Image 1 (tube, helix red, strand yellow):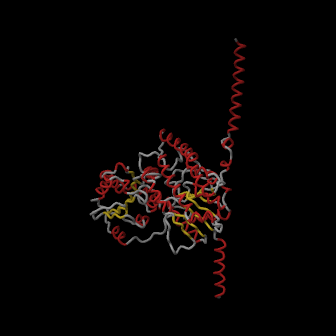
Image 2 (cartoon, helix red, strand yellow):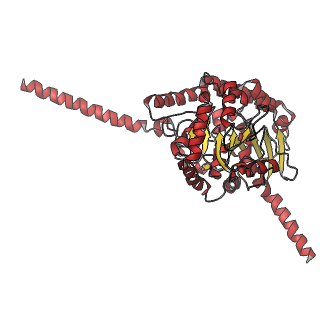
Image 3 (spheres, rainbow, N blue to C red):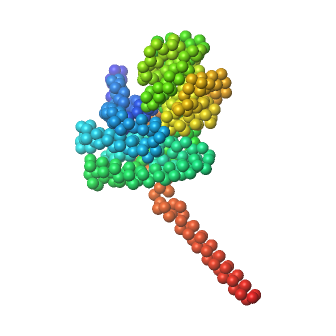
Length: 506
């Protein structure tokens, strides 16, 4: 019997090792909100016997997690701060071109530093490395070069709706009004439609004529002159995992190579709160408010007046307030607890005494709030936060307070309206039920499709055939040309006949 048990164990180990793939995963954006959604996927893939080499700005540092080797590029945060990326994109006076330049400078410096590092050099030059799949964030595409370098398929990952070039690459619909860029606020007005139209074409032009050439020079420096062009590398993407959901983003026609993981993949099983937080919320007899502007919106993005007005608005409320902020306050009133970090935002929102979530409109935060059936007040600052908050207001599970209109009156009025008017909590529950209703947990879906790409060494059979056609064929310009020629000949002949008839009559 003992020998049989040992045979089974050895067989399981053999199967795990033989079937386990080596996966190179790269999430280079210095933002916890970009890293967190995919942590459950790394754990699930490791549990299934795969070996993951993860390049990340926020290592999990979990010694119990076998099969995941982490490469820390946390210096990306210092580089983002050096180039004042979040200060720039939260400044309404800056154009989207200035915002894009700040991002590109920071990303290119991060890429350079990584390629020069011992870990990067090891990935480039160590011939003993073997990988079966690349999983890489769909931001700037330079890191996708490892797919060509190792001659392996790759999956693009996006913790929010991704930039339009990746939908282009996947063959998905990109429409100026129906599916605008996620960073654009587009209402159904002529000027918004014009703005979206110009944005998309200017964005594509800047991408192809300024951003890609800069990245190309970086890749040639480290991978040689024969490295393919950025568009060629990008167009080899086998699949795209994108965190979209019809609640938060417009409906978009998607190809089979695009897998949506927008049902809160990062939200795990509920865990106990820290004792002092549990006690603070348990004792909130009239209810409590949770206020967090996420990891990227710093308190300095609010002027002194706004912070003072918020404090005045919260003081004296019948509700207790949990306030996540890096601001230091002296002598806070008893109903307010402020600290730099709360370890479990999803579990805080699940507490029955939480009546309202005041948020910056980050996608993961809004997913967590609807998962807990909690209405929201949105104060958006940059990126997709604006469109997320607009969507929240449109669907009726929250209100918006503009960041330049934060006063004691506007904040108290919004709090009173959302808490006292049950239509907001009813809508939050309605869309929370929709949000949680998925055929399978997102992490299982993502893991299955990852292994699908591994099994078939890519998924080129899902590729939209339009992408490989010349423009004249894709848009049927030859057909339209022939039709136009027939129309022209017909009109010309008709004109000659009528002219001849008129001359004979005269």
